[in-house]
Structures are given as C-alpha cells and as structure tokens.
Image (cartoon, rainbow, N blue to C red; front, top):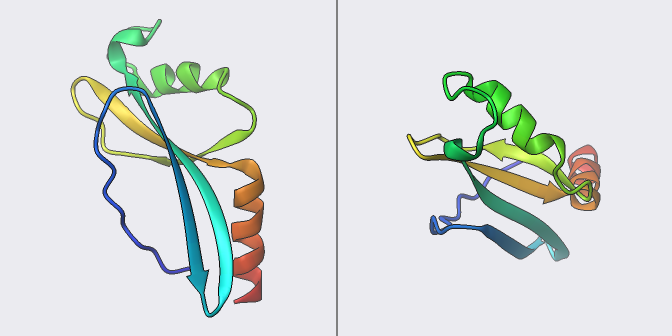
Length: 97
C-alpha cells in the first residue's frame, strides 16, 4: 500500500482526523485519531517508557486500535489510532490489490 504523509499540527488533546480519498474512482473514508500522551501522566517510573505507554493504552477506547507510535519527545509521545472498522477496510483493500 502506498503512503501519503499529511502533517498534523502538534496541539494538546485528541485530534480526530477524517480523510476521504478517491483512488481509481473508489471512495474510501478513513478515521484517525492523533493523541499526545505525556510522560508526566505515567504511573510507573519515567525510565520505563514502554511500560508507561502500555499502561496508558490499556484502558483506551475499544472502538479504536493502535496504528502508529510517533517519535517521542522529552514531554510526550504522539500516538495515532485508527477506527477498528476502518482498519478492516484497509486490509480488505490490500487483498484486492
């Protein structure tokens, strides 16, 4: 699958991103969520950032699934989620290609 990079401004809170693409005449709507997870919100020691991310994601909205973990900074890590139903659509499109 080809990729297109779209810059999303880094602002606090959830950023719901809806993308409608048309490829070879086929329309596809995709829903993403980019959220900043702050290290200060971790309940585990800050040196174990993998465990911190694991704990922060453990109770996340079950309609969304992890899609991409961005480059962390000293303050936060940006994490992208995709609607579970959209991920199924993406996989089906890959099988058709």
